[in-house]
Image (cartoon, rainbow, N blue to C red; front, side, top):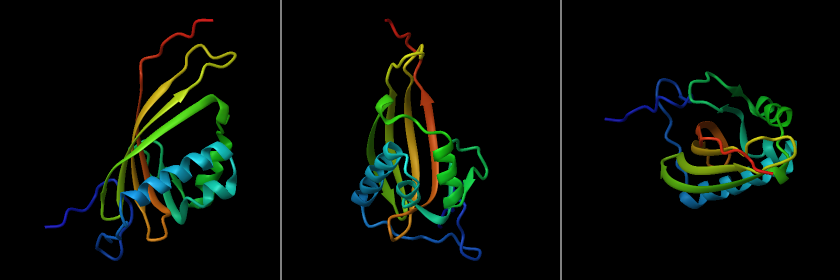
Length: 151
């Protein structure tokens, strides 16, 4: 019996479409491109990560989140992070069909005016098409307890 994922939004007719991701290296490559796009704050770099009709949810309960490549890119550019203020470490954990699962840690760096340096522990669900573009992205993140920055 096939189980239809409850976190994804893509169906073809009445059936869940099971696209195949080549391997965990494809997920790793996408994660590398994601970091480069986030660092560049460039619309083309960000847009190249996603299909035209992609869905991006920063929180799993957001329905629908940002829908479409243009909306995703706009959201990225509207809320940019200075690339000098954070680090990202991602590890691809598993691939099942088109679904990739990654564990990522984002650490923000102490900067002027910031009283804490947040650290986020993330699990990302990344549904990639055959061209290595994301169709559906769901982020599960937890913020570590804040530690005061001592000057």
